[in-house]
Length: 436
Image (tube, rainbow, N blue to C red; front, top):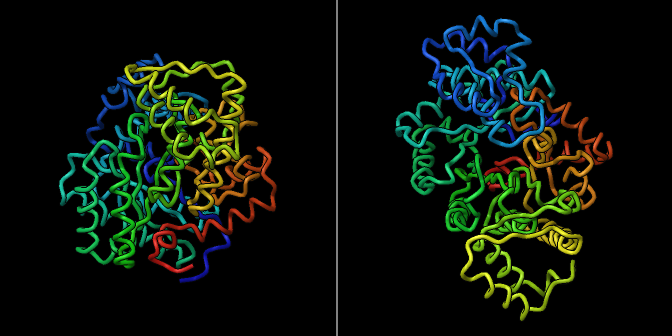
């Protein structure tokens, strides 16, 4: 294998989200039966525009019109993003032949943009059969392998399978391990597990046992070790900044190797001044109990109530379902101190943050680019990567993401450190499968 560390390592990338507009158009045109309802219904509900399946390809035959329909490059809630992403789902067939083609094409396209190492995430339906998962995973690995061969090993692609937060992750994990045993190619190219999609309602504590199992298995058999990549702190409209930051820290403490986005950890708290957060009483209780247990450590970062007062607050919400939390200056100073505590603790855990500047700006609750968490991660010296997330639908590239990071205020020297260090934060290295 030739040295490929002179380019970019894109470690947070969703395979089908990397499809460029012109390629998606080709895929859709060759699909004899697009699943239109997946796209048209939510799109009309969220964007107020009716899409006519019977005349779709004539209505959007102009490349700019199709590009405008497809790209998500404005700030908006996750559901608006998903409504556009659904166009990919509707137009694609997601069969082994297509997956093989897409896997190869995405690596080749990214190589043109300077990416020499990529980890690409793929997610299957909860109803997918064992054979279906095997055949599609094998096809993805074959596509990645073919791209490497075409590029004469100047670039490398690896695969990550995204699990369902609300599914039977232990069963899904058994399937993953089984197909790795069945195919030496899958065993080589499949390097990680990911948790993505909607995070609200799925606290990391529910995955603690699973994360511990994966890490035990990694230690027991390093040749099939899998990194755990965990989207967390990306969308947190249902909780306070303190609770969202706690989720990020606990994900690292429970065993996640890389933390996807982690916006809540570094966003400027004062950007929430004057807002009222409605949080479940259970979530607030979990946070208060966390503060109670670690009060002495956290007090080095911010001024907390006594344990007695925290205990009384826990008692006061025992019979409530929801709690309103007004974000005043005092509470947000505590939030900032708690963020700093979490960042230092995550540094101790050696977990890596995956920052995706454009994605964070568009769907990640970053209303002001000057409040982007990347700047504080830089100031704090966090282990981190910069990635594209869904470069096809965001219309971005690794070069654009690094340029955006510099615009935010990250120095060129530190960006070069991030670029080089990213090759040491691959799933194979973090899981223990490969040596640094």
